Image 1 (cartoon, rainbow, N blue to C red):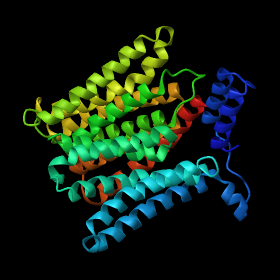
Image 2 (tube, one colour):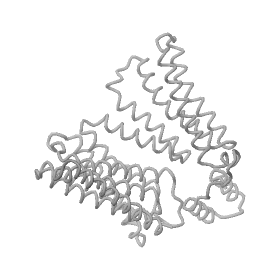
Image 3 (cartoon, rainbow, N blue to C red):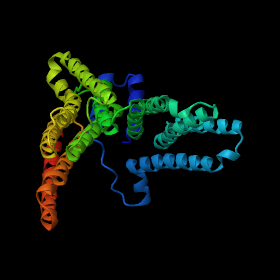
Image 4 (cartoon, rainbow, N blue to C red):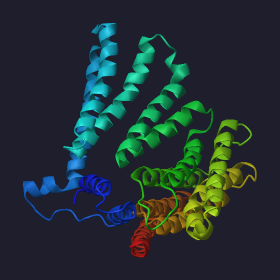
Length: 391
């Protein structure tokens, strides 16, 4: 059954007293963790019944319309009267949102595509309206990005849509990067810990009978992916920026640590559910700690490139272990995929760093190829074993 139709049916059944709310929650949780298989039909009708294909078409349509309208306006912007410019900038996202709302009951996936159009074009509207008003767009960039991010998260929360949540999370990273005078890569990594912690708060306690909102789950895996990628990058680079000269990044790092501490305290108050809550919250603490240790090891301790690569890989391994245990606790395959990505990036860090420094030429290529093949086998087998435990 289509998940959107199931959601509407469950709401109707609970309102009419056919089932109680706890039963509806258990059904939602089961369907969220055991999605129906795609239709096996091979014809056109079968393809259109595949919800993923319809969702992809709708979302791609929304993106293409946003890009097309933006390109059209960019080509003819100077020739359009100012009043008409402002009207277009307001009308496009509002019209898309209204159409998406009206289609929500009839064609929910197409409606989400229109909502995605509204969320994306809001950024164009916000920046160009500020420019039309004669404001200093460069000085107001963080605030304009914040407004765009707020709209995107509002749409994502209302629809519980994974793609729109992902877009909003990326916009949140762009907002912090624009607002903070710091090292962009490190700021994004620490922001990943904040996003993961926000996902835990949005998702509630990891109870087996509580459905996992798409917004919360997407925040967690996107945040985890940011943190994993940046820790691996620090290990590969071998020369992080000085801490003393980067107060903005330090501020974001402290905020990330505080966010992790908050979710740990919140998990501790869960009483008998502490073991589950604590395991789910572990990556929120492991992410800023892993990145902070790797960063400090290269600056405060002054380790060389090889030693820093080893420390970075150990930090990455700790973060990956935390993500795997959280994935099992939360029953989220996306976190397993992020951990697998981290494993491959860790192997890549070794290849780029120590191995290429020790050997060169054809021998390095052979060693790198063998290492990648072994990494592929290990990643595949490890991912399967974790997925078995989740199921």
